[in-house]
Amino acid sequence: MRTDEPLVLGIETSCDETGVGIVRGHTLLVDAVASSVDEHARFGGVVPEVASRAHLEAMVPTIERACAQAGVQLRDLDAVAVTAGPGLAGALLVGVAAAKALALALDKPIYGINHLAAHVAVDVVEHGPLPEPTMALLVSGGHSSLLLVPDVTGDVRPLGATVDDAAGEAFDKVARVLGLPFPGGPHIDRAARDGNRVAIDFPRGFTTGRDLARHRFDFSFSGLKTAVSRWVQIRQASGEDVPVADVAASFQEAVVDVLTRKAIAACREHGVDDLLIGGGVAANSRLRALAAARCASAGIRLRVPRPGLCTDNGAMVAALGSLAVARGRTPSELDLPADSSMPVTLVQA
Ligand code: KG4
Ligand code: ZN
Image (cartoon, rainbow, N blue to C red; front, side, top):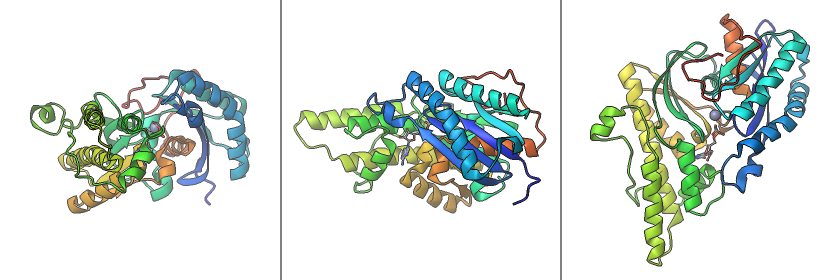
């Protein structure tokens, strides 16, 4: 391994994962994650206060575990990177405070970086240098965005986003309607394997007429979610069994059809030949399969990090920090804020 490449530790605490990753250049040395997801399951969603407390407890042990597994001494780091936003305010504060303490104690530069850009940057540790510009479709419980990325360390342009629920949120809500556990995405994915994806023709938001004209690259999933619950209620009211696998498969198809259609249209319109899909929903098996098929027929190269790098983690923050160091980006100030609504155009705080 080359030692002239930047060695960067990344901290991620924007939601319910305490992630600590260490990257040297494009090489991932360790990706340590402690999740509080089980503590939120009985509430059916992430409880911010519970997440913040869990980060506080997990932070130091997770940093120690990451360093031990990577065989890295903190003093050898070239920089510390941390998610400055967007995310849950209290959760972000824990990570940012920890990163500042490290940077101050070690006298190292700090990079407060954007969570969404980090979801894009993480792919370098799996598939090597990022082609730029790249088109990025980011889909998770907290975000659904289509981004044009000429430079992941400094120039990220939003083309569209959800106007209501995030894609993962729709999976989680529909899972609840079907009596499946939280977080619902993986359960719907599994149930859908035995179902018929054309059994029920659920609506595709913002894909026709004036909606499409006004929201070319935006998404809307709340109408779909309502359509699924109404369909299930009608079935239940008439005393019939709910065909869970068919509902899951048809709902999932409606989501991934819209996501892939719009992502490919954005590539075509902007003359971009590379599409990257990231975020927790990128773990979805049907999304991966449909995106692969549609990209192949459109002549677009598709990059999807492995599922563990798609969900929130510290490696993605370290990867973006390492690129920022390598490209000579100026570090953040030590008084950098945690910004719960950090705009995607601000790659670094
Ligand atoms: O990126 P992530 O770990 O956290 C957020 O930033 O939200 O994404 C979690 C979301 C949840 O909504 C979960 O249901 C969804 O990703 N998810 C999936 C799958 N695995 C996780 N959705 C669909 N299919 C999956 N296989
Ligand atoms: Zn995320």
